[in-house]
Structures are given as C-alpha cells and as structure tokens.
Image 1 (cartoon, rainbow, N blue to C red):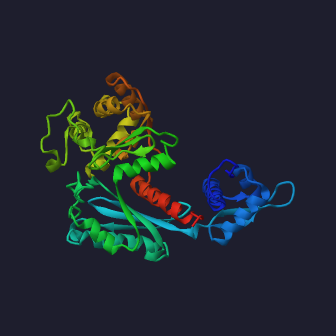
Image 2: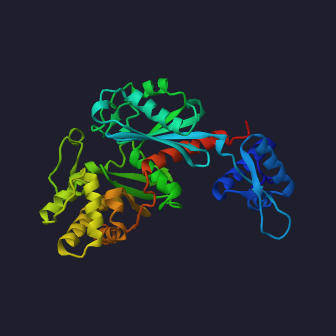
Image 3: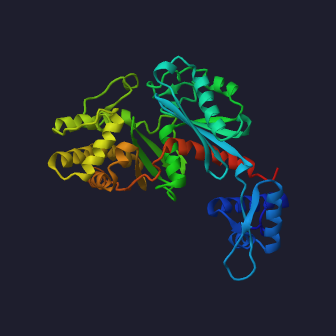
Length: 403
C-alpha cells in the first residue's frame, strides 16, 4: 500500500492512503500487531510504527493487549477505536419504525422500536423519526450530536424531481413534498434515504450472499414483492427511483392490474406476493393456515411445505416456485445478472428446497441462467443495510487523515 516513486500525490496524501489501508485491515481482521499490519500493507516496520502512533494519537486506534502463547516476545495488538464515530439507521414500515445505532466497527450499540399504527397515525412523521432515533441513541448511552450520519430505509422511493415518496401509498404520512426539508431541519446530522429492498441488497453485498459479486438481482418477498438491481457494483435506482418495483410487473397468470400505484399492487405481486400463498394453500385444501398477517402466514406455510412430503404441500411449493420464476424470467432476460439472491421471509423460509425449485423453473423459462442463492442476512436486513450505508460514509469522513 505504500507509495512508490511513480505514485502522484503529496506525502500527506500518501500517508492518508496508508492510514486508511491499515484502518480497513483492522476493521476486517480485528486485532492486529504492528508486524502483521506491515506485512499486509507492504510498509516497513518503522513506517508501520509511525502510522500506528499517528492513528493512536488521532483517537482512531487503540492498543488493546499483547499476543500470548507464541514463541518470542509478546507483540502489542491494535484495533479500531469503536468510539471514533457512530452512525444510525431506520427501517420504516406502516407498523413501526426500527432504529439502531452502530459504532464505527459495525457493532450495534443501541436499538429502539417505535410502534406507529393506530394511535400514532396522527403523529407527524418528523416526530416519529426523531422519537425512534432518540430511543436508539439513548439505548446506546449517547447523545444526538454523537451520530455522524443517519440512513432512513422506506418502501418505495423519493422522486428526485418532486421530493415526494412514490410507490408506497401504504405508508401514511410520508408523502408530503416538504418532508425531506422538514427532516433536514429537525435532524442535527446529515441523513440520506434509500429504498428498503436496495438496503437489503447492500447488506447482502457487504456481509452476505452477494459478497464479491458486481452484478446481481435481489428478489425480496415479505410485506411486499420487490427487487434491487446491482450493476457494475452499484445500485441502479432508475430515473425516478423506481427501478426494482417489480411487484407492478405484468405477468402471465393474473389479469392486468391497471392504475397500479393507486392499487399499490400489480400482476407479479398478485401472482407471487406473500398474500398469494395463504390463498393458494386454501385452494389446495391445506388446513391449519395461520391467522397471522399474510407475510407471517406465508413464511410459516412455505417453511412447512419445504419440510412436508404430502401432495398438497408439494403442490403448494412447486406452484409458488413457478410463480416466482415467472417474474424472475423477465428480470434475468433483460439484465442477465451473475447472481440472484432470494431474500425476505416468504423466500428464505423455504430454504434450499424452494431455491432449487425456483432455479429449475427459471432455467425452463429464461435463456439466461444465473445462479440462485438464499440470502444470508436474516435479522432485520433493511436496518442492517441502512447501518452499513451510513457507516460507509461515516468511515470515509472519520478515517480521512489528510485533512
């Protein structure tokens, strides 16, 4: 990582590049010795020592202990200072706002859930956001001013030309054209917003099944059916932020849905969304359908069908796989991705059994044959993606020692 004679830039810039390389290695590996950092970066021992002294003085790394049980003298170990910076994320649904704070290493240090249905529908959105954030900040033992950046994940997307939230009519109170300005005035830290399924894709790209993949599609099926598109390593959001709103996609097997944004549904959603699974189970004579909200009922039914060996459950899973593959065939025919990640409880609950059925069906329906995998990030993936997004920018700012 050290600069060479042909490397343009000032010594300060080169030092900053080496500093960032060392910090990224410490984030990846945890505790490292000076010798190990030197080997991984290609820096000499004196240069690595100067680097660590500089980062320690800046409050970015901590000396945490020594190596033990190895031949030779014990070596000092270093790690990134968790308190060097904090970021926050929000996962917004019609039922609740889930907020969390993470330190700069990525460890969640505070979480708060704010229910929003019924009695809170009259509460202004800005107050809901600040209440949820304050709850997580308090749980972390911090103050609002300690948070460097916030990322808010919602269904749909804010149209950059109007400032209005689109594709999410089921999210009450979030459609004011002045909402983003009101949030900016109320929040003491920079904030960004992102589509919830895009954040799941970001979590899978950073931490899960899509690591190392630059071109992939993530299909999400939980409360709604949606997709995220990662092309050339970057999220593709579309002109109005609506790329990946595949629930509105017309597909064979269902009547055309017109005025889809008013209906907040479309052909693919009606064919393969979570609400279709309990309905299909009833048609097949399956009993003991859970009375839970349809997303939870669908996950339960799919999980049970993946384990059962009777004809109705096998038929349920096969039909569901065919329906999922019907919409995916359009996506992969246009995008030709390297990978498709199946995420959301209505997909992950089927595990490898459902994945294999969808893979087989997709190979019958599309000329392009990407590999299908089940997502790895299962616990609050939208929130995890929001934190990862906020942390990426926070690290860029906090770790910049060239200033």
